[in-house]
Each structure stands twice: as C-alpha cells, then as structure tokens.
Image (cartoon, rainbow, N blue to C red; front, side, top):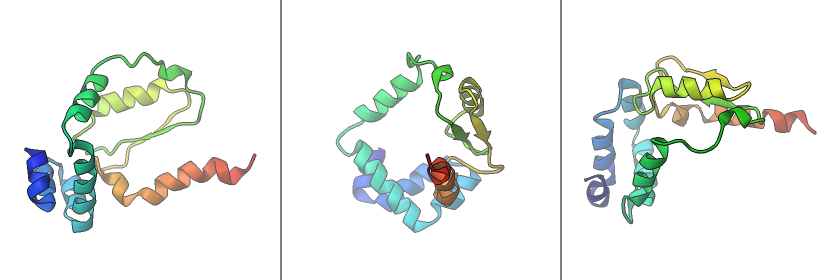
Length: 133
C-alpha cells in the first residue's frame, strides 16, 4: 500500500505513515519539506520491491552474531522517550551492552527527533576530530 501511495502522491503517503505516529513525530512530519524528504527516502528504499524491509525485519528479529560488548569505539545511543518505532527496553539494553556507551533519551522526543537535532548529533561526532590526534 505504501509503495502505491508513494507512486500516486508522496505527500499523502507520508501523511498515511504519520497517522500511527506519536504527537512529537506528527509535529515533525507536519513540515512539508520533511514529508517530501521522507517520501523520497522511502521511495528509494521500497521503489523496486519490499525485499529490503523484509531483510531488515529478519535481521532485527535474530541474533546478529556480534557481541556489542566488543565495541571499543566511543558510542552514544539516542532514543526519544516518545519513540513508537523502537522499543525503549531494546534501546536501553543495547546501550548497556556497549562498554562506555552513553544513552541519551530526549524527553518527549519521537522517532524522527533527529530531523530537528542534526547539529547536536554532528557536534558529538566531530568531538574526537576537534581534539586532534
């Protein structure tokens, strides 16, 4: 249904997606430029079929064969407290399995909070680079 909706009306398709979103995400998705960008992303991901999302679901539902406890790079995981797409418990568990991982839980933020927080994420990513070798 989403593939067909994207082909007919990308804007309407994202409105359909936002119908099950929480209030914070509906607020982000109310911005037309965000809806169009997301429609473009979804079209690229499922435009030729749904094999990709099927693979994603299969991967999400089984052991990855990698131990997060072996991660040595600094890590930060963000999950908005109002995210309806990713279970809070799963995110908290994953962050707890990664040594030294900092868990950030923006209060009241939904799944798409990053669309309003690129600067925060990019600043964090740039911290090591700014510190020099």
